[in-house]
Image (tube, rainbow, N blue to C red; front, side, top):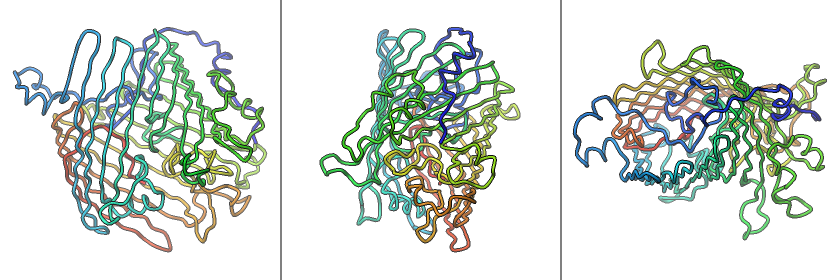
Length: 524
């Protein structure tokens, strides 16, 4: 539907950008705290919108902890990993990661989580970094998460489950691993079974870390003000019938190009393109398509030239940082469109696009470690969907972008604050979306084929069963070990989902001993 596009490489050539060479620098991948985000730095070589999951986050130690003499037991409990080795040519660390919680839901009774995790990582030489994690879990979840898991056969962001405790709870395990190699000043190679995120906000309309882990190979070229990234990845389709028992779930492939240009220390522009294609079709096995192997190729012309129904998307990420601690940001994702239909304003179904606008600030009101974010996200009906799930923009029954899929508008507000070892976080999310009714596809579920749409014209956000969501959560924690976020935590969550047919209200209290900086999105 669109035959021409602007690709990152094309813009790079046309603008004749002057290069200045600086060290590789990206934003921390796992942003458990809003304070882990850094809008800019003294160098134009810092790129905030492409998160680096090879960087292990860690809270600063409270003042005083580093000056007094400490015993081995004190250091291991409150300052260090369980095992730490620091040599001239290598380092290594490892820790046990408990995540033990008990709570109560007015709709589900007693809830609990029993997670035993382990993390290990380190460096070899100056250029190679590695990390591996494993989690074994059993959980009786709140009612809305239990319903989501049974409908989609997964725990959000953590993969497939099997029944536990007479099928009243979930048993699931997952792992992740990442190898990062810096080849000189300008190139970084990453091989991982992990997640990725592109953007400056809490959500991403381009590529999010909300879905389950997947294997990928990523090449990052750093040229000072310009950072160019290419990634090839393989995804799992749990919806389409298996080809055979021996082959397991059907697979699909994706290639992603992202160019981030720091126009100045305050302004950056990122251009994004992606293609998703199915591993096999009616003609047989297709596998990895070597047409997409070139890391600087124009993806959209290649997608068109191979004569296949591959799914191509284009995106834009922009950021304006008026100060070192404040950032205005936004995104735009374009799945399909026809210009004449956009100008006609008749709500054509295939004008599939979405966007984001937001603001965030660290050390708000000059209060150290007080951080705030507010953003609005929206996507038109049928965005990210395709004729078949074999090439839609999804993985493991969740979207690769926003976890709500499409046909929604959302307003997220988050604030967090840390004082010494005390950590506080609050979130208020309001959303409106249109659910399917009576088997009619109104465009929210990206796993439904857009060929089952109800009408061609008159489509708008919220069509279908108009539903409102209110999600409020408050968390208080006492940090025991800032190195891997071992903490005593208590939280209260209120969730209300309502429309003119039903209303679901759930109030959840939880306390426990938790650890790790995992970013798990349960606000859906």
